[in-house]
Length: 588
Image 1 (cartoon, rainbow, N blue to C red):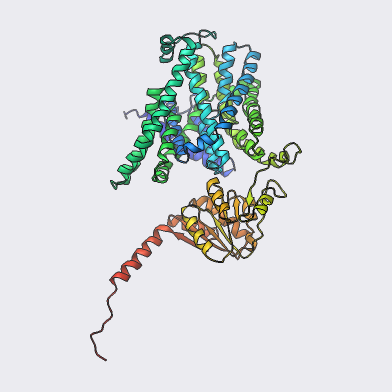
Image 2: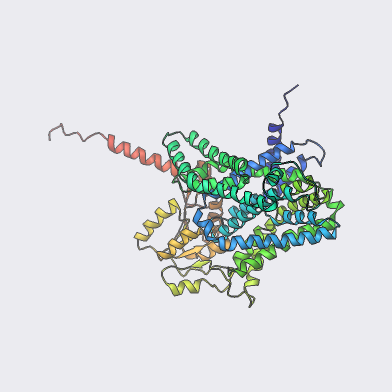
């Protein structure tokens, strides 16, 4: 009889089915995560056939959350986090209060206790870390102002949920539940009541933050540099993972801080090292794999029969998640005088719930506060809202021009294209004729440079030194600000979008230089550019022979592979230094 291997079986079944169903979903133009969720339903306990280990799936999913938040922290800095505190703190707290109030009203309508209603409402108020960050990354918004607000908002929600999970066992008897012997309950007995537990929680979180800023800020970058100088890529990757997982686990055990928050701070501290870009690249494959297992784990919790047994309460729960709290977030962001586009993006990203909701629902049932029907509604609301979240972004995109054209919000437009060099022109370009579209450039016979990172920046320096007119397509806020300060015409947005490429006037351009590293996204740019101008000279970059073939098949004239160019340069240098000296021995 073969050995029992539940861990291997869970990973193989989860990833294998997720791949098959994710590919099918993508084929019929649905988000792949729909396939991942369905894979979880199929290997879960509520459907016939193979049943994966649910507890193992949950722990694997937690690894995905840790690595995802670590990756976000690598692109963040303390300055970025503090820059959005004015809207993130009141915004998140206000939205939590609104969603909790709506949840309490629904719970009371279903005949539950007030305590159960509070747990239910709080579970509906907090967005899923994985879903929000995946949505932001797919739209390349993490490094924009919208992304910073969303992540800051998420961190505040995380802190509120940590506080709730610590206080709930202590307050359970007062709210009509039962007392549970736990660390939190012990803390309540050792401290002077509610205020003691509250103070103890703030002291723990404050101690963790202080430790990371005072000690981790020096220790983690130093450790990375020491490992890098050892010259082993394997050891460097291991060090990155050990730091991410170690800080997350240690923060949870020592300071009662969530694993996700600990990982975020580890990444944010590591971002101060010059090696942070390499650290982000090295953890990317694991982040993607384990985040898929998160969606599989969510699907395993869902009972499809609940859609038949409780249709009206499920619909009401879904409306609170996707309409109630999102509308509240939209109005809060507008109240802080941010553009309509930012308000819509934040509200769409929050129109779902996830991992903290499951933890809170489980604790509520354990304490006798939340009925099992409440847990089922939370699970159903989570799965449906995650599936429908891409639709929320699509609705937000469609609603944006309509809302901006309303007299009440007409002044809340967002600049999507700015011509550098002339302040008046920049101000005029900030409000195009169609508020959803960037203003088309007036340049002709020009070069379009897509991406201004490490490669694009070097190309741009050469273009600036020439007399050739050019413009840049870029979506990272800090880079855009620098380009505008230098007077370089910039179209702000993702170049894979048809409207962004249209604004670059490719029909009358001389050359397109695609300097972004993502071959799939670069392929979309090349394909659309070739359709817009069959005569356009297109140059792209790649990292492998397969990427070269892919981009060439889509219409690129020249695809430069970095490794090949390095090899050719080394060969030329070797030939130059080892060339035989001319023969001068023979006399004329």
